[in-house]
Amino acid sequence: MWRDYPMNNVVHWPRDQKIIGVLGVAPLATADFCFRLANRLVRKDWEHPRVLIDSNPKIPSRGRFLEFNETDPVPFIISGIEKLFEQGATIIAVPCNTAHILYSRYTENIFASVPNMIDITTAAAKNIMASNPNKEILVLASRQVILHKIYKKSIEDAGLTYFSSDNQDLINNAIEAVKQNSNIQYWRKLIYEHINLLYNGIGAVLLGCTELSILFRDESRIFNVPIIDSNQALADYCYTLATKI
Image (cartoon, rainbow, N blue to C red; front, side, top):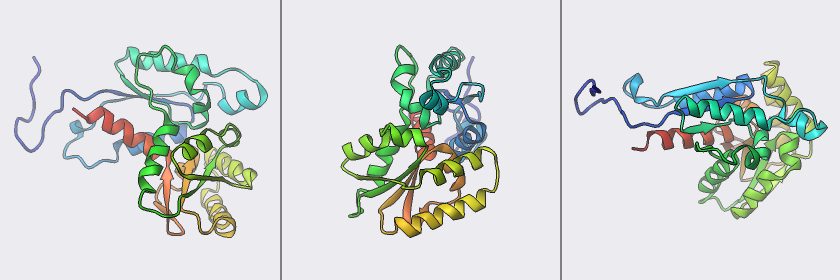
């Protein structure tokens, strides 16, 4: 028989929280997402929601599938989501922006809630920019996210102005450096210089790649404009959804 413990009005054992499943495709980005899920103000460990994590870097590359028509990752993503659902997860996060190019394919016929990272991040951007007269958002993301215009459409539909970098090689190299855990401070400095040189005066910077989330994890602003972080936005959404009773 279930008992609330300890039984007082200060701390409690929330029994009705949903279970979050995390299907990770990039280990560092997955770890960063889980850090953001757990980085909350609570009194006791048990006030956090339960999280099931499948960090599976063996899922075929989303970028290489889209660019070179290599192995389709969608069946593997579907299998991962289904296994997390079978274990009890009802909210399943896929913390990878590039994977969301394929979102409609891997969420079809899925019973669990699989939040859309692009829509959630855009909603966060709209909220942050509500009182800012400068609606221009610079989106830094992987080459495929930029080419498939998933943030462009979402941001413009939200009434904001979309920009992307004119030096995609720089952004891609920074993403690869994070994956390799190599010279992170150097690449952060290069991106700062790039933004300062060409995009000074924008309203916000949106990090549309979870590796870039790692690059700027300890920062909330760049040159006094807000950072809108896709990994943080997805983590906040899943946490709120899981703990809302």
